[in-house]
Length: 180
Image 1 (cartoon, rainbow, N blue to C red):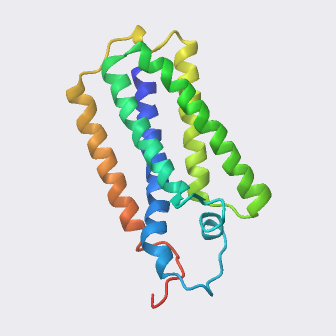
Image 2 (tube, rainbow, N blue to C red):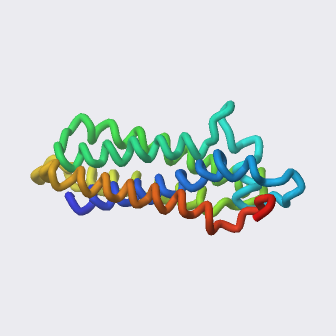
Image 3 (cartoon, rainbow, N blue to C red):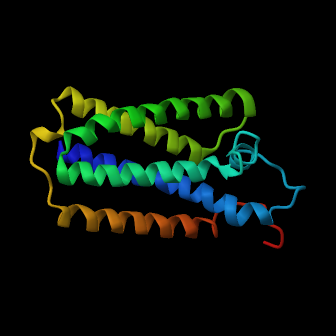
């Protein structure tokens, strides 16, 4: 069970990385892309009318969702709290429904695929699947908790490395930025 929860946290970090990259593109790269640039793939998706909820990029909402999942995963691993475990499944269930809707929008409405969005959708489906496996096997509270001193340093390092990768990715993504 502890390995499954550790995998849950790792997959949440992967989802956060994909969302963080897209958030960085929204905030720092999109303002530099000329209007004449061809919007295809990720750019077509994130600049579409469906890429925002009001003024907030969906990628940013995804990044927040994954930070919450990482935090709850760390708490789950270090406490084995049954109440937390009961609330995680409906939260990720909502994430699965939202991800399915976003995949439909990409394939059926926008007509373009964002690979980062697909990584995020994959991560959400995997989080939900891991929770179902744990629930089917009796719940995580059936095994001892992992000491917080082992959980949180690893979580902080993983998120920090993912943040560095997300920011570095702006320098290597093939973005049609003026003057680049």
